[in-house]
Figure 1 (tube, one colour):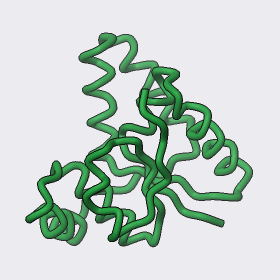
Figure 2 (cartoon, one colour):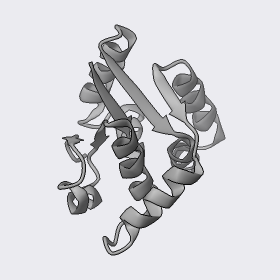
Figure 3 (tube, one colour):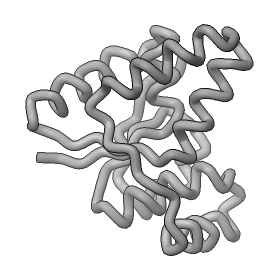
Length: 135
């Protein structure tokens, strides 16, 4: 059984039917079957929802949230230790704090990051990444 932490890139790929959608849908299926574990931070939930709202409006946001609520994703809280770990990861790497939080959560859980965001190339030596294709 593998553990995965989804970056917002992964869910947006699924919702927008981008090339990575097939891989993310496959991870959903394996999580539903109990073969893998999918997690995402509430911080990234917010990132997905504000992006969907900005691109497609409030009705699309409601549909996206309903889909996430029914998904096999375990939502993880933003804790003090994770916030501090993300801050350490961000320092000196030139990556967004939200991206650093994905890395911190994956390290804490011993999980693989699922993303297609090229900013994660900066931390490939720190954590395993399941790379999704670019749209």
